[in-house]
Image: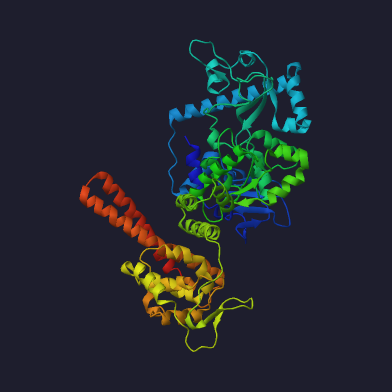
Length: 623
């Protein structure tokens, strides 16, 4: 039996453009391929193949599918023949039939029949006399007949045995397994949904797999307002997104998918003409649902309610997404006005107001920073240190090293600007040698004296004595110093992080001492300051084995700033890792325990990963 997991693996191992390209001449178009559609006659190309998302689509005739669908619809193969041919190409063995799995598949097919019959009965009940209250509620929501029909609204009558009697052609056990009936000890089974407005929940193929029900009887405080089907062989709420089978085609046109809190929000948006919305089903957005969204768009937009619960839901989604972030894939978040959900906002201000908010969605890093900054009052140094610890704890969960490095630098910059606002420059070298530039241009200049005066001997001595014992003048430090001298505008940005690094190269201490002003120094001024404090410019020989991009002659300042930030992250992180590894090794040698060994190996693995990151970055531009 072919499981969904096995079929997903098969699709991931096949390059769709290669399969389609055997019989259709494809042209590269950005990140996709295009051609004249092979399913209908046309003169200009409207047929696109997207390898990243694993599907083809024609904007002319609507043809859509994956590699298996291509083999069946275009090549004319039977499903199993298509699977076997693709599996041979991918080097995969087709699983042999399993009698148990075959019986399970037959059982799922039978449950689909049960759910289809239940949906037909719920719809008929809504149209009958007993559905009057449900129809009245739909009218108050402003849903027209087209919306009611499109989303399949129904009604579950009162009565503990009504559904069983209506679906008497199915055994009781099947109704229970489908989640439509409840079995409790010492009581007769009874219908799960009673006196509720019913809404079908469908899978990617549009088949009913579950139901959601909203209570209609006022005053029933002991019953939940919304009730969903339990997990069944057909329905896994953590792996299902409501309305995805409708939103996915709309997303191919709009280039976005909106995630709202509940299915009634989805329907309210659809009624207002916004058709690319989905919703989780009674749970916070899961990792599996985020992956499902990324298959369709790279940056889904979360649009949760403006109350505290909605903001908590957004933060839960962010914390789940952080470990999964990969290049070009993230989330954006819309902040609705406090106390309003999407339906309220549309009714009060119109669909255009919501469209405007969607166009101003905040980035994930923006929301993360603001949420942690505003989480608790920041009155004391301890409070501010707690903010930094929380931010860095989030960064540690990011698995992609490049994204983690960029998040660390971005959040450290914001934290430094918040916790250490710039002050007026009070540093004046003896003799008045260096004067900040006052004409609005970057940098500074020497006032004509042949030699600038050094920083005060007391401050330089203090810095050197603090950092010299463990100082390491290795290639990484030398390269970072050379980079800061070449790009002096970056020095104030990184001074606070470098100042906290143990074992700092004394030359870095001199640079940090000289960057207290709001104006950046010029490269020549920094070189002179180093010489006059008894230190030398880093020589290319010191970092001969490390060819960093920010030292290349033709690099832009934007590129240099990004790579220099990554190198400084490595420089700051290295002594901390080395100290932790030394401590763990000493503990293991003293205890010889399993826990101590496990901890040592964990840190050793992190150190190896660190070394690999340094090696990759340092040799990225090697010729």
